[in-house]
Image 1 (cartoon, one colour):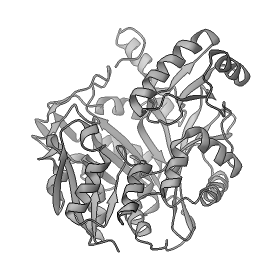
Image 2 (cartoon, helix red, strand yellow; image 1 turned 135 degrees about the vertical axis):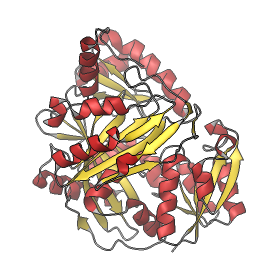
Image 3 (cartoon, rainbow, N blue to C red; image 1 turned 45 degrees about the vertical axis):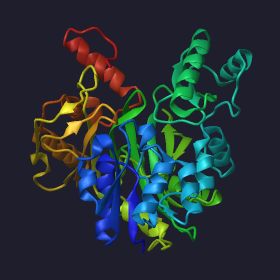
Length: 460
């Protein structure tokens, strides 16, 4: 097994990785920026190394600083968590060059899935159904219009090398295409240093469903089912659940097997998530792979009993999975991402937490992942995630009831949070009936604002 793991991240995901390491009797090294010297993840590790000032590009996104911290601390492995450098082929290659284990897919796999156009082509060759799109990066206005016309409006413009909703614009008609294209190019260049874009057909009433897989070095794969990630704001997930109310067991088995074959075809290793859109007719369309641990991995852990992070570490150490095939879900789990944002306007709300009471974790079936406490600070430098509240029940109804209990008993004062928004969603008739699509929050928020006598439209 690995001896000492440097966790190249911060916040609750750093603590999550450290928890798995402790169960495996593996030492941990934290990295922190100057803004995070007193953060819980820096205190929880066996050793902490400050790697730079608060801006992420000068600390958590600095590959050389991460590698130097690993060298100084004697770490034999680096776990990148999610976000920051989690899908960085440069970090994976730098680790390999210095004999350090990278807990994630090989560099070649990261480069493949870092290019969305190349990834789509590879998955089509591997037999997955791929959402129709322009398979080449189109640059001239005429080529862009021709590609969009052939797909049929509406279309969506996406960054070829990006993710997280950045460099992405929905285009309803030809008149909107060029302005959307130019805006997406600027955003993609700023966020990813790569202005290349591509087009996909836009499915207006789709569900966003992703499948979790583990693959060891021998090519043995374990399918851990799917997560429903349809409730989003500006392509950022807010609430996830597993299993999806829209996926039956034959579909789960069929897609799980096809994904496993596709993963083996490209030499995948470690944990990965294959993301799809499900159209109104029930057909699935591949859109991308997240070649890393996902924020929402706890819902899968709750319904399968598999510790995904521990399996990541074991696979990275060269161990084989105890068994392949597929794991059937047991019960139902829901995760709410509690962010430091106003629940209606989505205005960011950094600041010091005056009170932080997690009595919502009292009772069965609830897990709360967080790195904050009373007196802690939500800094404007990083992601606004405050906590992930996860509820598990024998069925979806019990999971929803436990989530409501957890959220109503959780007190976070001193900052705004999205807890009131989540509670409204959990009582919405369409959500309760499983009638959701990717435009759910827009319709839901418009209805809430109209009921309150406010102008329609999104806040934020």
